[in-house]
Length: 450
Image (cartoon, rainbow, N blue to C red; front, side, top):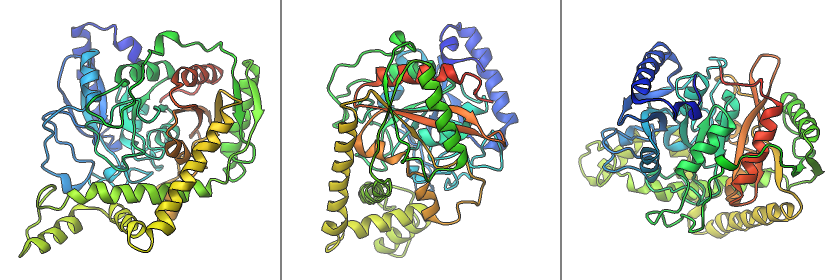
């Protein structure tokens, strides 16, 4: 598979020929179920798009029955930016329903398989985007990250996945899960491609009230793997991770040392508090965002004998089990008598998490962290909802603090499954994030998409 950087140099005829080859390859690998639909809306470099990002005149469903029949009337800002840069949307990728999940199994279109081992999950919720890039079915893709939904599937599939600082990339046209956490980002074959795609989609947007009105500078043309950085490592933080993760973490530390970076040991609070704060916050916001899908004003309608029955049937049949579970949890934490006990406390913990990161970043440039406690599990291994929630234990604090982070492959375990780690930077310091990631990538250049 050619890289994004290489694809940007192709002529129109070369791109058209490449797209035809890509369509054939996607059809030949349809069992992976990375794509919901394959289509192109222009002559540019083809980019796979997660099914919760608006592309004008495309069906956009967030992999949910309740949005079947919806056709997007406008382009998300990131889509307009892609088209302006000579790129074009090329198919909708599968995902967990409304981005609620870590395995891409809750989609109404069926599960996506991990190209590295089809018995394993590809991660989620951007599992379709990750699988497409990893299997060579996409040059690059866009995903969304609410609690690790770009970085975790990137780690499971052995590609690069980057979550920008909250507010750096416009959320206009993104189907909302948790509005204070969601962020669109690139999923690519390598760090340089991620920087190129990040440059294209980032920037202030007046259509998005959460967009940061600060100057955006390109990073791809300034990438510098030779910068010597102060990088924090978290020896206590990884104690509960699997042996595969611990081994990769130790190898990454040695690689960073040999590249000339200064390694500083730090500690963060027990990630169990991250889990609690995240799932209270995310489900509360999800409950509010999904309230509009009632089968009357919005969402697929299932007729009942009256409006109340129509509402109940539409939501009952339109939403999957995991979405219903999170809606109920969100309603509970926002309900009278529990709001102060749960939601308010979660926001206080969120503030503590942000403060803790800020304190660490007074002494370091980057933090090296696991992205998941294990490599991609096999289908069926995460038997309970709590098992899935705990798989996000290392990724969600980044979203709670609104920080940029990037996941990249650094090792493979004995079964050949990719092991990914993440680097985290202070808010709006994407240049340092990409520089550090490029340096680490150069030390582990043998880990590439299959």
